[in-house]
Amino acid sequence: MRKYENNCTAAGDVHPALETYTFRRRGVTIRNRTVLAAMTNKQSHDDGTLSDDEIAWLEARSRGGFGIVTTAATHVLERGQGWDGEFGTWSDGHVEGLTELSARVKRDGAVLLAQLFHGGMRAPKTITGVQPVSASTNPLGSGLGDSEEMTASQIQETIGAFGQAARRCEEAGFDGVELHGAHGYLIAQFLGGKTNRRTDEWGGDQKTRTRFLVAITEEVRRCTGPNFLVGIRLSPELTSCGMTIDDAVTVATICGELDIDFLHLSCWDIRKEGTFLGETKPFTTIFREATPAHLPLFTTGGIWTAADARLAMKQGGDLVGVGRAGIPHPDWPSYLEAGSKEPSRPPFTPTRLKKAMLNPTFIEYMRRWEGFVTQ
Ligand SMILES: Cc1cc2nc3c(=O)[nH]c(=O)nc-3n(C[C@H](O)[C@H](O)[C@H](O)COP(=O)(O)O)c2cc1C
Image (cartoon, rainbow, N blue to C red; front, side, top):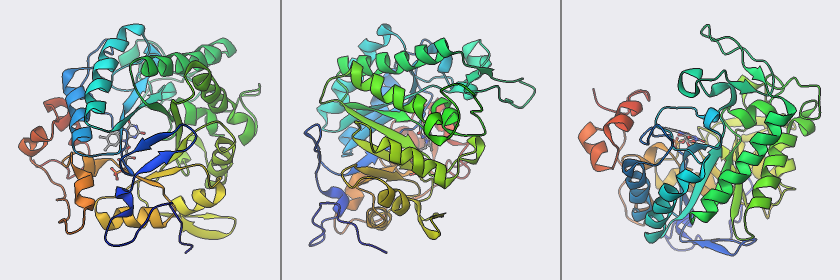
């Protein structure tokens, strides 16, 4: 496997993920290359305002030394909400809480990103009160009918909403946003040929199915200043939306031509491999090779130990993202220091998770991840 140069000195026993990193296009420097990946935690209020519990959870990860702290997915339109207790960025009324969050996270040294999204056909009517929309009419399953195909004006409204949400985040002091194009939510529903069967300019081949994401990215840039970070999260393949690895590489290549600061690959397991152009390699390596070298690549999935993080960087990741390991270990980056022991693994007791700043709702939610919380 090719050894990637992540412009870091791996000399001595300094872990490469503990090196600083500068996003050259914006001049933003982060203290290390660790990223707390976006994690929905259901801790906020019904009107979309942030709760002190959600702020405290993110603040603790900044205090714990993460280079980047990413918020949970946050809906840019009220009807795009995916879960109860999800904070929103769809109203100017949310700016006050966002400002408090950014002040508290940034005080402890992390760079703060909001993950902007719209659930599309995965924004349940039981939460939003309206029938879900998507790129096309798609079955919702469980007797819930079909999603409604978005009209051209709904598409424009949604693109505008992403821009306004980013503008609010910037006003609140955030360093940037990550556009959630992974995991089958609205952007991914537009990207995938199974969920997007439109015959207008928003559908068609992979290039035209990517137009929605391109338009959102351009609108976010238009609504924010030159130093604001804008990145895109993608899945390397996504069966639920009909996206193959070839499709995802095409999307990533188009993203590489946009004015963005990073691409974030959501692998779920960095050891998983895919086959592209007849060669089988880890997803991270495939996407590193297919995208411009100047575009920083974050990679996330199954990273728990310092050795895992090293592997992710060897595969071509410039920054390493962690989800679950950052839940019981707010100070996860400290486990990358020379001579550190390995971070403990699940299951964790509710008491332990409470100490790690999870409220009872979030602890209960973590029971959905089998074996994470003790019985
Ligand atoms: C509780 C929980 C909530 C998550 N919520 C989100 C989310 O809001 N947005 C997102 O892109 N990924 C979400 N993910 C996926 C994580 O960002 C991450 O990619 C995944 O957990 C794999 O990384 P890990 O093995 O380090 O946990 C979530 C994962 C967990 C465990």
